[in-house]
Structure formats: structure tokens, C-alpha cells
Amino acid sequence: MKPIALITGGSRGIGAATALLVARAGYSVAVNYQSNSLAADEVVRLIRAEGGTAITVQADVAHENQVLAMFDKVDAKLGRLTALVNSAGVVDVASRVDAMSVARLKRMFDTNVVGSFVCAREAVRRMSTLHGGEGGVIVNLSSVAATLGSPGQYVDYAASKGAIDTFTVGLAREVANEGIRVNAVRPGVIDTEIHASGGQPDRAVQLAGAIPMKRPGTAMEVAQAIVWLISDAASYTTGALLDVGGGR
Image (cartoon, rainbow, N blue to C red; front, side):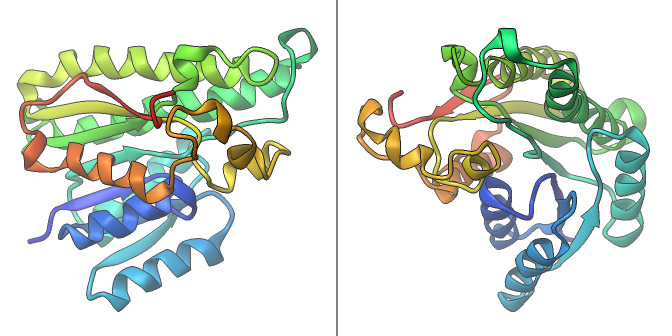
């Protein structure tokens, strides 16, 4: 029986690239999406075209009831989860902290932090030997922004990713003796659609000069790091924060 992976935010960018690579590694894949069903369907089509097994699962991870329904569907359609990649996340338009609304902050933290917590909670309930599981792997998506603070642009986003770093280390130590490894990847400037959702579609190219490698990264480069952390090649790695940022 194939191992089973759930990729939140799997319809675009890093999540989509990860879904494809995880499928190539032999996993059955659940591709989560919030609203773009066509994009999720295309990722599933590509996986199936290569002989893989994949389904789409709709859920806004900011809402617990939707997360619970998503996990129930994965249980029913694929089986007991082996790997979770918390890739779903949001950014917002560039802003100073003194101009940020509470609505913006709640959206940011409900999706990026609370959503990752709830998804990880449900994964642990299925993976942990304490709950009758056989172990598994969780990979969280953080950001190099957690170390930089993103002043004048995305301090809220950076802070949400700082929370993910702490969450990753804490959860990793909490479940290390229950067959579960927990790590995070911290991408730098990656050329994906997320910049357009923040109102700066050309941001990755514009920032290239500030990156030691003088170019933005690709979604596939980040996905390769995620898939390594999921794999048995990283069997003694837990609580790690892996920077994939071109030296930034």
C-alpha cells in the first residue's frame, strides 16, 4: 500500500510542485485547495498522467470545521495519513504596522498559524504511536522572512512565520518518541503567484539583486527540500529549520 501525503495549498506554487514530487516518490497525494478547483484538478491530472494516485480536497485551513472535513475525506478516500505538508498560507499588500487592521492580522494568523496548528493536530492524531498510528512526517512552510522581519512590508507575515518556526521545534520535540518527525523549510524569494496576491507580481525579479545568488528561487527547488525531509534519507532529522533562500 502506498504511503499517503496531504499537501495543503497544493493547487499552486510550492504546494503544487511538492504534490508532483511527492507523487513521483510513490505517495498517494491529497491536493488541498481553498477556492481554485481548476488549478487543483490540473495538479491531480498531471499526477495521474504519470501513473500516480491523487485526489483534490477543498478546505480553507483557517476554519476548523473545513479542516476536519478535509481529513475525514482523506481517511475515506486514501487511508491513514503518512505525511503532511503545511503549505497553505497568505500574504497581504505591503504595509507598515501602524496601518494594519485587525481584520488583516486575524486573516494572516488564522491561516498561517492557526491553520497549520489544526492541520498538524489532526495529522498527529492519525500518525502518533500514542494514538495507534505507525508514525509519519510533518513539514511546515516557514519563510526566511521570519529571520528578517520584513519591515515596511510584511511584518505580520514575518511574525506568522516566526511562530511557525517555534511551533516546528516544539512539536518536533513533543512527538519525537511517537514516530513523528517535524521540520520546516524556510523559502527565500521564490518566483510564485503569491507575490501577485500581495499586489507585487514582479517582486521576485525586483529583489534578485539583494539575493547573494542574484536570482529568485523556483517552486521546484523548495519542493525538492520538502521531499527530502519527508524521505527516509532524513530519518534522523527533526526540529530542523532548513533555509532555501539563495543565501539571503
